[in-house]
Picture 1 (cartoon, each protein chain N blue to C red):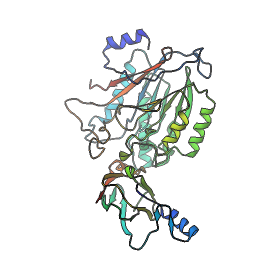
Picture 2 (cartoon, rainbow over the protein chains, first blue to last red):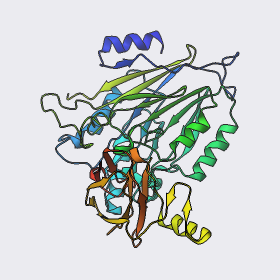
Picture 3 (cartoon, chains in turn green, cyan):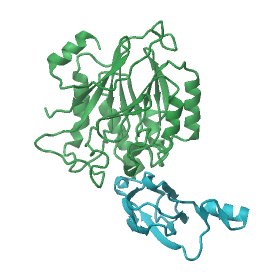
Picture 4 (tube, rainbow over the protein chains, first blue to last red):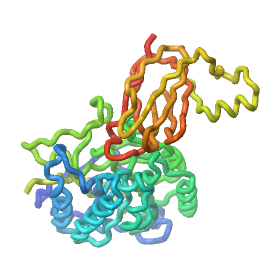
Length: 300
Length: 122
């Protein structure tokens, strides 16, 4: 992150919390270029997750305003991110296909107010598991894809359109083929909804064949995974690969195994929106690292 | 170690080998207790199971509505539960304790609440 931007964040008092350990170090090639030859250049993106548009209930009496507050908060950043990534559960599930499409449409309308126009999505199980991603794809296109940005290869995976939380053989073959085109020191960022590792399968916090994806990624030196699903910040390593879970924008969930059921943490009227937030990811390519900053949602 | 197998695998092996013992597996006998576990949105019925260590049982699963999954991660036990089918897991528990089980096939708005506890006693 450049000094000017860092100074702005401090002066503006935006409340970002910097994640300062376990940062992934990029190993730049001798020329400081990615596999594609694009010049490495610092930038940042924003990760938002688990907005569950359409949810209503005591865990968030402000459900109708939370996503809009998040959009406003991102828009208030003086320097806009290069892009925004939503890592799934855009909407809260419903058995009614018509209602599902209504929620997806409303969600799309709300996030259209983001100033940054490069906005990307992956589905969560609430969006896609009941119809194998059919409605989601009508609104947001492919559920897994890649793109390249300023020297980093981004891979968006879908581990939710199969209701059994699997990537599936076809997608794994696609991933393997995509990776084969990269050099082993390529800089790779992976987005998923569910964790690719067994965080806590007792609460369905896992991807049944996620280990196969990790196995494919392990030969690559510079891989970082960003995901959602567990409604809290969490950091984990599988070998040299860091996995970073983002907070939710609807309600926080408890620490894995800390209570008998994975029920949402109760809304705290004294501290509205506590535990909710979004993440800024600074790709400090020249310094060979990511810096993560967590931003809360504020009442005002 | 807890042993399991699906009925389909069981029948295939039976047809192939004509009975007897395969490695650590012991063929089901009439004495093997059958425990029926129903499921519907969004519950297992029952959702509390008690087994005895070392005593073989057959867990027999059905669903009244949509596809479910039964998963006891700590014991490595899982099966899909498919509408119109009876799925079985043959189990010989050899570890005492309480083991949470969960539906691991997303089945709707109450999916997160679909869980239970398998207790293995001496």
